[in-house]
Length: 101
Figure 1 (tube, one colour):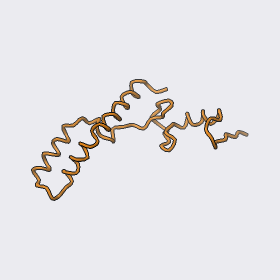
Figure 2 (cartoon, one colour; figure 1 turned 60 degrees about the vertical axis):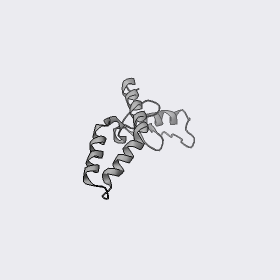
Figure 3 (cartoon, one colour; figure 1 turned 45 degrees about the vertical axis):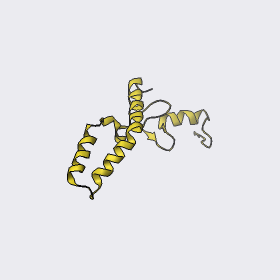
Figure 4 (spheres, helix red, strand yellow; figure 1 turned 90 degrees about the vertical axis):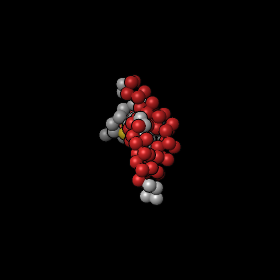
């Protein structure tokens, strides 16, 4: 099991990203628009820089839904390889049969 503090920090980041997604998108649209004057684009860049860094989507770490493990994460299943193996051993994942010889 991962540290509870790391998992909670990631949850706070997800909430902040969801909260500030629209504002960031608007500022980025202003920044990338070549039609607007350079002064307005620069002001938008400064406003974006003032926003919290944890509001950026790239700060979110993919973690296992079951254990919170940050490495060996399958995006499609939203879990780590270890959790997948354990659930597969117990037969709790439909369609997965673990064979041994």
